Amino acid sequence: MARIHSLIAVAGVIALAGCSAIGTDDAAPSASAGTVTLVTHDSFVLSDGLLESFEEESGLAVEVVQPGDGGALVNQLVLTKDAPLGDLVFGIDNSFASRAVDEGVVAPTEAPDAFEGALVPVDYGDVCINVDHAWFTAQGLAEPVTLEDLTKPEYKDLLVVPNAVTSSPGLSFLLATVGAFGEDGWVDYWTALKANGLKVADGWSDAYFTDFSGGGGGGPRPIVLSYASSPPSTVPEGGTEPTTGALLDTCFRQTEYAGVLEGAANPEGAQELLDFLLSDEVQDDIPVSMYMYPVSPTATLPEEWTAFAPLATDPFEVSPEDISKNREAWLALWSETVIG
Image (cartoon, rainbow, N blue to C red; front, side):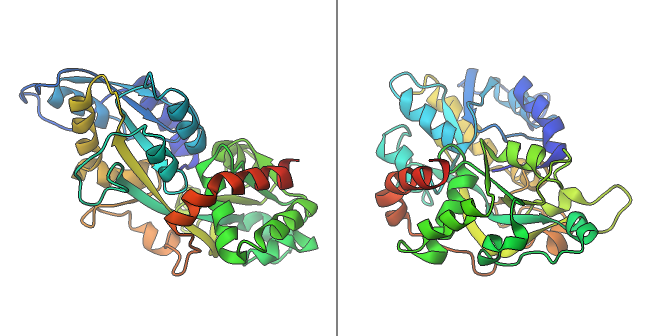
């Protein structure tokens, strides 16, 4: 998203280096041999060896371009649509998907489950408030449970969230508050959060790894916006319980899409890479590498997810039509209210 944890921080180096995935040594190169460029958010990573074996099987060399968080990704795609940054995009989520389609940055597809005939779902997860159990235990303070709790004085200066303008999880949380409090109430809610010492980070990584006390960086804030699937990564070595937890009454469901970029230099290679993202090997890897739920119903989930990473039973919702119609106005009002 996406996203999480010290494992990703290490594995991200592998992704930036580019390349690898499944296949056999004697597989014949495809007709689309050459270079294919994947444009994605800065939380994209796959386990060591996956992209390389894809290169071996397909005959394609994969380059990875990561312009920033999910919101920054879409902004860059729009700004460069007349000279695309690459061939395939992965990581546009349902909070920004309509903008990407409306701006014409993604080519049409005949995939039956595609969003507005252009973007194919690859993974999903719940964006939720997370808390540092260890911090609250040490302070003898009860943890918050609901969105409303976060405005209470006992939680002053404890919350950090990523910027809704540049971060897809940040926008997802803005949408959660629209779903929770309605168009007449969400601005007042954010005004109360700001008055209660809210901190806004540039992106999810900064919020989780730097500002959050439970993200490994020793930050000062024990409440952060992250994912319902974040806690399993905080189970200490030799431990049996995570040191963090997700508040499942605060969530918005996020779906991440991939699509061939309009004007791609290698659209055939982009389609092969998209098919690879939907393959069993990658779908099984997504929970491990990116801490999201795979869209494939036959993918294997880590055992600890049942106990420590359940999805919300009733996440807040905003219709795609309302997001498309109001997103820019909501972001402008959010920025005016929260950033000033």
